[in-house]
Length: 439
Image (cartoon, rainbow, N blue to C red; front, side, top):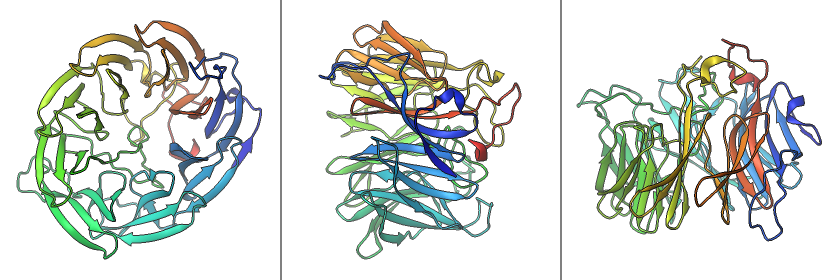
């Protein structure tokens, strides 16, 4: 199903999802990425399945590959693209959240549904820990819940901290079953504490249901969302539009902060400030000790889908909004020539003073852009239409631009290269249909 290809340009590919490495001519002292319009692919990993959340960790690129024939965790070598190992999920199980990946472990949740293809049926959720070095299973733990899991796995000092929400989606009923934040002792399999979280909110929201190896996977929300923590508390976004701070030792809610829409990713904790974007078109900075607002910036579009880039006295924030209708619950990401569903796309990159939220400059895009890469005084950013843009970090002026000729879904730096996760679907015509089994 999958194969490695060398020296084949993206324009020659018609039906696949890929992870490919682009060469950049940047100085040996790594002062700046220089986007070369003639840059070639160093190698390509091809598959007819869908790829989620590529992550570079040590000497591995680890990602989820999922399609008609099942779901697997794949590790490839970043230097040549060859497969180092693969872990196949059991056929009857689905991946519920994207894995947490680090140098030592790949940690993931999988679930078995009571009724196949019925995502409202009770489920059994299992924590699986893989060794990053070779993909072997270190251990598995069954979670004491039948609810859905909100965030990717978070483990500290032998405790698994997880957050759940109930099957029922009636946000307007104040008596409805709550969700929970829990701490599970991995040595004993017992809960250390369990804290109820109200699900009521003032407006509808997107629960970000992710069941990979399903006929209905929405790539717009298929990204890692991880709980963050300091020495005493954990912080996370929740489907009711709130950010919570919960004590690690006893599970008590220290504070909660309410936004007006869904929380796509968890906050970033940097130098005594909690930063996060929301689907309510605002980016926020909070005091983590009190939960009080320090400042917020109106972004004009969803600011809750990508993490900010932190650079001391500055933050670089991306925002974007796809004004389109989902087809078979799949959000289409493609270029302007493919169909008319992206004609109303808005996106921007903001440079913001991290102390007071003052906007220093703004650069607009015609497609949703990802978290930028900063090398010295140069920002390099890739958008979903495959445009590479170099900006001066000081003022946002454009230095260079290039085109990858592929739909891009992630871009991450590695050594002197940029690893790009893309999908090329040129068979789209206006009104075309997007199918998850043929990416």
